[in-house]
Image (cartoon, rainbow, N blue to C red):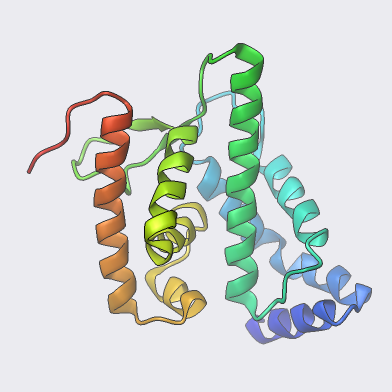
Length: 193
């Protein structure tokens, strides 16, 4: 099936509209899995449901004619980025409506150094991830693919064209940096080992 997805992506890139119609049934369940991954840490009663997140990401994917699709992993990496953008846009809308009211919360246990999960502000995570990406773009990409995209170490290595050892090292370092950044931003004392 991976070969079929890659072939359909290449046909779609060349402008074949029928390829998109054939592609979507093949990738829909994986897009739903990505959306569930993104929504996993959201607060109960979040206004955006998994299906709506998939649909919004799908619309943005279809309208992204400038993307030069490479393969299945590249497609899902872009999809995870778009889902992150959708969630951040929703959080900004809510914040603007409530003038700084309740933010979207995300469970960031993957970034946590301690075993007790802690919710964080999605907008703070987005700002921290943007800051990380400015001085360490590859680390930022690894976090985006692993945390928001739910990609494995191996899939992340494939998308970025690097070894799994480098992905593991970048992931570990980025998690620690983000934890420190988010702790400082929230006014909580730094976690010490």
